[in-house]
Image 1 (cartoon, rainbow, N blue to C red):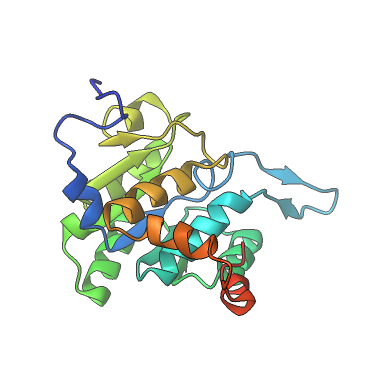
Image 2: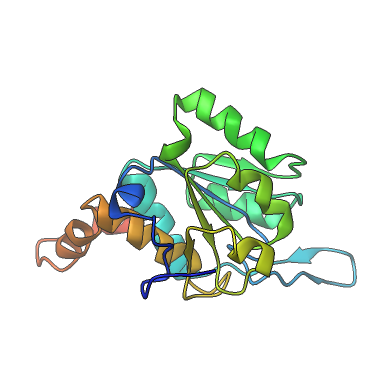
Length: 196
């Protein structure tokens, strides 16, 4: 795979990031590091990155539609998605491409307005229906070779934040957010709405 110095394929333009309206993420290995920990009673523990959480909320507040799409059912992921007040949490999903097509129809989106972020072979069908495909740094080779962009961060370690910064940066929202957060008259109420 031949990437530019900024980890994008040569045919990936700033406009590709600017047109994104739907950001869809795999969960295990993308929003988490892929580890699954169970206690003695079979309860699942997963870890999500707080910086990713901040960026996900910022993306939602900027008007992007956020979807989590996972082949695994997870009460932990469901709870975290709800805590961040994100739009769609599609778990135990057998067909990620079909799930994205449903979202495209529901929100009247084109393929080019959709970005999918993944790490493993079950994410490849989602790549076929999105205009912008992203692999996390520690993705499997089959995903890395088909991605338009490869994050510098590993899954669950800031990869989602990195993607969101690129999208919101291209759309002119990221710098506005940072500027607002550094103003002395910043409202604590608004800050609370950026929960992580």
